[in-house]
Length: 253
Length: 364
Image (cartoon, rainbow over all chains, first blue to last red):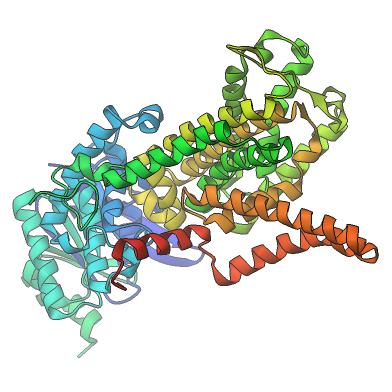
């Protein structure tokens, strides 16, 4: 199991500090939540980890690897997957194709095999199709398999988004507000999926979420960001008792 | 439950292999087989004038070119206004071999299949080069980059003595197992050659589209940020899309050169680029069979309007000028009407017709 360490990461856009010397350690096998008010830098931090932004200074390490300047497609191949906050699905494709696309790196046949198709390409496609089916089964997406993603409801699209990240077979899963805009039943579903992921699949989960009730219930460790700085961390109980966190969320007494 | 192998009443797949098939029912497969049989057999029963044979051959060349354009513009979502230049690269590959080795060299007359593949590879190389700006540019800016390639191509050909300054460079007659293809058999021979190439390319592209090499094209079209996060290099994928389009265009170009027995720059101008784009739009962007409908519709329309304008010119002498304007006018009108009323092209009519027949006598 590999540890992800973000050390002293600073990200600036012109004069604006999105992140200031952020130290975050993601321990393997547990659910780590990152919370904070709007604009606190949660998504910026995820973007740094998944390679869309590169920190201005500081380092990001995953096990022995240095991810500070790695690009997203490199990061996706070493077992870090990311589900986006604003749906970034391939809208013109079916749910099945969306998930198969996440198997891109595992489909290791050449273009000549692809043109002929029979033989190697067909076999590998079928193997990966079987893997995708496992994810569809887990995420309970069976009724939507062949449906065009753009035509599905918001809640289902969110689920497809998580499923697609899962299809990359990650060790570390970054979920950016997977429950935003959902009703209570849909939230319960997603929470159940996240807990099962940890228990059955042994996946490390990093959760960015606004629903504090959910976060306090399921997280093993919480980091609180405000104005790009870590203002508190620890177990849910420790964080809830932290006066700085209370101040950021509720205001001064 | 045993599924009917002829009529699909639902999905009864029992393995993932079955799900991957191109033809889901035996009916589909038989229909395709029949269509191919008819296409190969009709010349034995029906004698056509060389003029019409040339039109048919022309359509087939355009089908190959538009298939390439559809991959880059329809599937990968990158507008290319320089597609005729890629076709030209293929044709001029044949022409330059003709200039270098002499017109009747064995490679050109006997090794023409090799030449066609070589022209395709040349097209792919240039496609990849022109695709390089796609690493940085998007949308309309990229379209302008491809337009500039079209201009550079025309200029280069027009000003180089090696290419006869755009004047026709002749290409030899080819030799087949039965000996040299004679003048009377020429168009018929190339009809069959084109048909074989189209079947190969068509199934090749179809196969490509159901593997990762086809899916990644659609992925960068729909969302290149997410494609990046899914392990695809978006820039590389775009360059690859251009190379693929260039390959098919190059093949089409070589076939064009052999079909006309000559290469001149006037067949690869900006006007042709735009009409390829029009064929792709009218046929239906992002569908493979759209690449067949588009050239068929546009070329046949062109033929009809040409005859109409000839007829008008012969009978109403005063309207001769008007009649010659009829061709570009109808061409433009068709594009505008399609963009307005059926942006998904003829392929969409085909889809509607298919589902109607499938569900008949029920409405839905």
